[in-house]
Image (tube, rainbow, N blue to C red):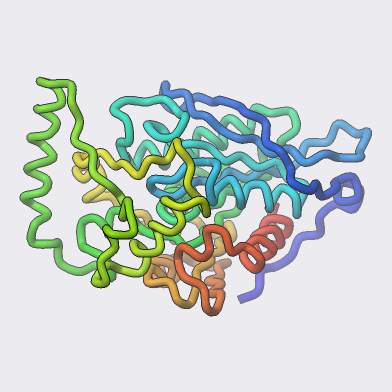
Length: 327
């Protein structure tokens, strides 16, 4: 699949320069009354003109924060394109506000993306008609979900995308299959936990991924096994991503579906990137099948779901070219 290419204005292109190790600005913006902490990447320009630029919102994985893979992609895309990029901590997570802590609310996560677009649209350096969005892992579900109805998002991309609702309610490796036998009991327990929270003020937190190497079991999906190596070692560990998940989030996640209305993204362009060795590849395959043109599924040989969090030598240039072409 080949996208039609727009010509980026030569004057603006010559005014943008790539920065090495671009440092972010710390900013905050509002998302439904919750203050979100974010890193804003603004590449330097040699232009004397007060010209606004395209911008890209970048969302992080479930359990992640802006200092990890989303921030890496935000920085590298900014360096390669000269565009403004924004990586942020989702509500209830990282350095952002919101209670209870570590709640995973898919609808709030999608609104965080929409509100990030609103924030960027208020900046003088950003052209509000040229804003795109990128989601990694669970945000590879939240970003398309938000873009299905938010037409301000002019180009949509994902890396190692998953649909968290399907993952939690139907189990790993399934899509559109029967509910897990224990789901109904788990939802009953989620309701009971809400009552206990109100009565005691205490929340029930569980680990998202293996916390130690000893917690890894051979029967676990590779995605979970490799998550330990990224999140719990110096490779990707950040103190503000403690690997906690509010257990009762399940009653918000269970009926959520990221890719139910993928056709609504068209005629805006869609790029989904996944590794050939990713045991989550099927999510991108399902989503791209349901989407309409223009669309592309870009599969990188030999890489897994987690590999693409920081093995960016092929994914980052592809994303930069995609956003340069369409914003």
